[in-house]
Image 1: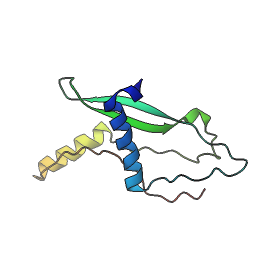
Image 2: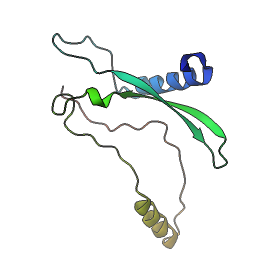
Image 3: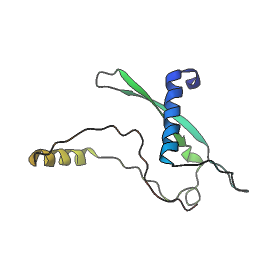
Image 4: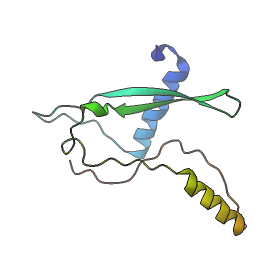
Length: 116
């Protein structure tokens, strides 16, 4: 169904273009005896405070239930800001009279060399 909607197709192209721009992957031949991991698209609408859809977001993710710990991955980490940390930061910025700016990060990748 998503392939019939231009907004979702544009969101998918945007995600793939970010992969290419940041050079986080390249297409290679699968080695003999190895099994590829399946991927799937996850779709989400980003809304503003009043609930109006601002943009469509498409993410290409690995189907985690197909991974085997120690073989397909060793550890998983997702950086998430906790509300406590944000409150402390804002309180400190207010105390020090810092100017705080808000920004929307389109795509974030941790830079690390994969040895596999």
